Image (cartoon, rainbow, N blue to C red; front, top):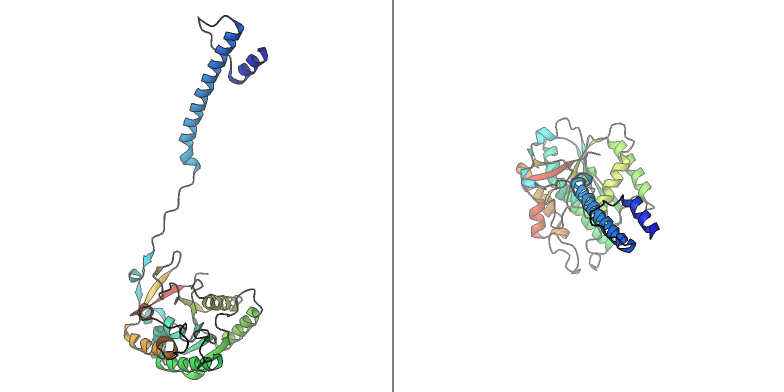
Amino acid sequence: MCWLRKFLAVSFGPVPSLNHEPRSPFNALVYETAVWLEQLRSLNLYVIRILFILLPFAIPPMATPTVPTAIETLPLRSAEDIFAGCSSAIAIAPHPDDESLGCGGAIALLRQCSIPVRILVVSDGTGSHPQSQRYPAAELRKLRESETRLAASRLGVAADAIAFWRWPDTAVPHPGTANFLAAVDCGRRYFRRYRPSLLFVPWRYDQHRDHRASWQIVQSCLEFCPQPPRQLIYSIWGSRSGGLAALPAGEIGWRLDIRSVVATKRAAVMAHQSQTTALIEDDPNGFRLTPAMLTNLIQPWEIYLENTN
């Protein structure tokens, strides 16, 4: 028993003496153990109080949730303001029709100011109706390129200002794939040839993989450019219903006023009949822009994000 008494005394200090302590050694040990346990309980309560006091300082404050910015509250800017100093522009379209849906209003406004605009269509667009017997891939590609030329003419862009890269639809090269460097090399030569001061580029987080891949190709093309052009980012598939439902967190954006050319943009979009009508009827699972998507994508304004990379 002596060893237990010594251990408790070393660990918790001597037991305070009382006038009526038990006389027998066993009773004294029981008494001392009870007193030490009471001291331990008091110590634990004291430690718990200290922890409760320090706990708020140990836990980092929670980040304030970011409230999405409504599209209608974004600044509305004019073409004169946005395109001041622009000498030429190139619109990067991951698919035929993206040039009209994403930045057709801006293209029309630029052409009204006699500013040269070129359109670069990255993919062949043949993934929209893969089961069509009437329009197999080769025929569908011809149809969609013809539609693009008609849409561009309605926007004021000549046919010889359109380039078709014809990468496979849904398989535009992205980093890590075999053809990515080839696509980047092709893009660098294209940009060196035409030297645009402004680029329209799809959003890097669009839900379609070809849009994201097109953004990556453009960024790699401009990585070592001594004087890279300004990039205006548009989103077509920021949401499944078309366009952006709200300004994405961390992005800087505004609206371009296209009220004077919104009818022109609509006419350009509708030139893509394979995507907006029942022109191709033999593929029940083929893609078609719904009226709700068209409403979201054809507004009196176009939404642009500034490339802050």
